[in-house]
Image (cartoon, rainbow, N blue to C red):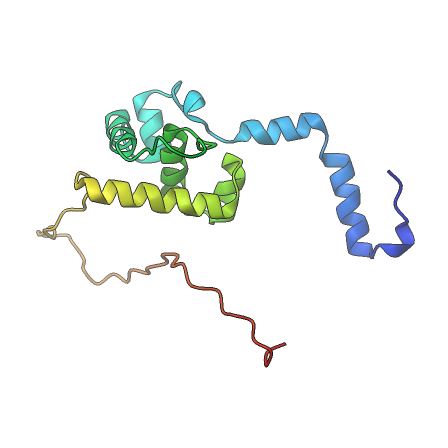
Length: 166
């Protein structure tokens, strides 16, 4: 494929040079294997898995079991297994990367990653098995003068394009 270099800006030339030199089949296979799939995480010991996800294997299997109850038999099968969906959600919560980065790691689109996170959250909340403790811890050495920043992503409706704005 030949491209007329004169029609491409300097920044695009760098981008194309990067893409041509980096996006080889070996590199794409490497990027594909970067994501932690359930099959790969199954090799981790319990302490390693807890360090990676923040939960134990037993809690993970309980989450998958609760999610299994909400699987629809109709429609197209999901690209990710239930285990991978839970891992995607756990990595989003634990590492707090953007949905774009999580989606890229798992080979899905950003809206799909958002739907997966929302679906997993809703199913786990409805199960009433994964709630935070209601009572605040008491005792000496607890400093309650801490600022907590809530950086939760909230989906909003995209504004309509009107003729006035165009």
